[in-house]
Length: 349
Image (cartoon, rainbow, N blue to C red; front, side, top):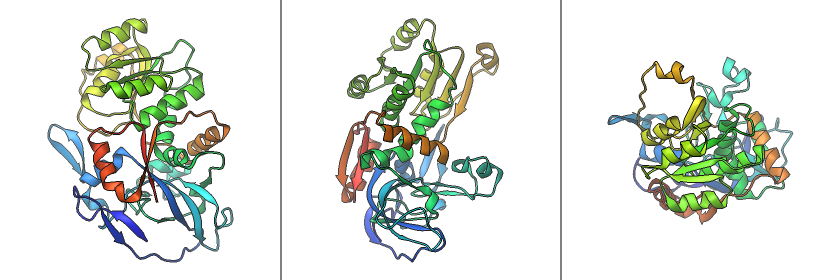
């Protein structure tokens, strides 16, 4: 296997070769054609997640080096074990990378992406910044016929994450405004899926005017730059006292503060992003405002199937995608780290 891999945390990726083996049981080897670059790849490349107050969650012990990032994987089946009967050699597939143990109560209820005993391709096991990827079972290889390959790759994380986060808000009425905070790759997917599910655009908040213009072009109902001191006041007035739901796709102290602050009584904020920081709130304000705060971590295999089905119906608008050769993987991480990406970078292998 030829790959762009982490050899030292925080340093540029390097070209490496790693040994492979023949698949057994229902295992599948996928020849990677495209792999999306996700912001969580940046954190893993750094070797930590920020917890705020100068605290860091060290993740350098979670994988052997050299390690291959990439969990938004599209390719073709190159080899399969003798028990793999639902996929065929040469079949084009998109990979569900959130692998559970399959036996714990969490997995048995269909939430294997939350399994404490499992792993994620590109996070705990080698992923898609390579010419091939080893998938532990054929059920994680889904046919994506009818969907552009780059879009299918992005569905595996950013699309699935956006879809699952929107679902956590529950049933919405026509008068329920929803605010998306952060219009990066996942936020742009949030706009596309919200429009497909509800036939209208969400309100979008970001700190970058160019990103907000892209969000407006994608169908946002309204956009606000949160660095404007009047932005929150204007949003509250425009929504007649606040939005019902807010999804924080950034996960920073300032983004959560804005998402929380723009809710009306009884509202719900869903935190998705992993940028880092800490939050604080007087406990009595939770019942007095009757708000709900929840976290969302990607989505289930069943939800991924629903995402693919929506994509195959052609109802999900394409987000901006920047296709780059695999040897630009390290530069792509830097661009994402520095906020220089609109939409999604897709590595072409």
